[in-house]
Image (cartoon, rainbow, N blue to C red):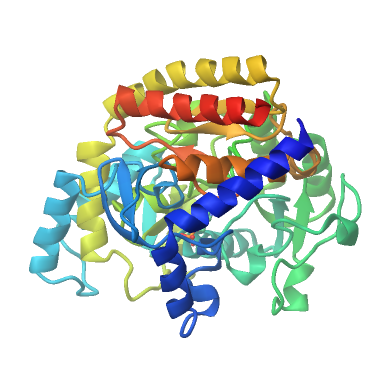
Length: 449
Ligand code: PMP
């Protein structure tokens, strides 16, 4: 990689972004008077500044300056069903017209929950309002079920902004020491020290150390993203998830899969379709299962969920099972995200990934391409990392930023940051898939110019 060329391109694309999006910049300044960072979530704050979106339809979003983008950001992976799908609009608006919130069950709740149970192989499910609530509640449930406090989590995973899991999310390496047993690190100030001692951070794809740790100490739960979707797209090595399953069975530890990003995206049935031998005891959901409305859910084995049934571990929430979320989620899952949708994703990726690989080869880019169902992308590491440390060592973050700007300036919106991936919308056309390939070819040619 010619670093001088990369810096030139970065400066040019940065300037171009600024000149194309003055309204977004002005609106950010206006919002910053009342909102920290001018946004509603710290993840929405990115460089140079976040676009303000005025509207979206199908596979595209339009920003406040009228620029249209093919939306592969997809609201951090939630909008796999595309924007304003008629079936979801109908279900949601009919429900809004009949009242948006009752804090009572609606008729759609049973078919929605039954669908979740069938699709993700759960005995019982409890709804909540975000992925964070799902992981927080699932952890409490696992602790109650086992009578233990310790939690194992993998460095580099994100499990939401609950205090107990905002520990060693993306640790500062100089502060935590080396694997196989790194120390803990708080990803925010304000995390109680008392909670830090209950978290054991380990490396993804290292089954040996997990087995040792579980044999040595009484661990309540291992929580893991079956595919790391917060380090690009890091897949488990052969046998890793099955080994986790075995180690948890041997030691009576609850295995929790955080499927907030994988559910209804990597496959119809989420990660369970891909790794049936590693199937978890509890699963956490969010994002794509709510049709674009705030949602979360957790569920799994009947004997563990029994603690919710009998009130020993209540699952609270004013907006749990919100009627609009349930109506929209049911329409999204049963009418839009059907098995055929996943065949389409595979068809798209069967064309896109080899095309990206040939671009990578031709221009000798330090990148690799990966895909699973609707998720994929060109990642800025020469091969798929094994874990967080590997990801940090291999990833070219400057190239990632330059690529993000280059694509945004040409009407393709990706989630910012090298730790994200794209999410294809169901309605993506072949022409739009070709645009993605063309955009990366243009980026590569520009880098080589
Ligand atoms: N788990 C994973 C794997 C996630 O990616 C996220 C959000 N990116 C969460 C949990 C938290 O979900 P939410 O933002 O809905 O709280």
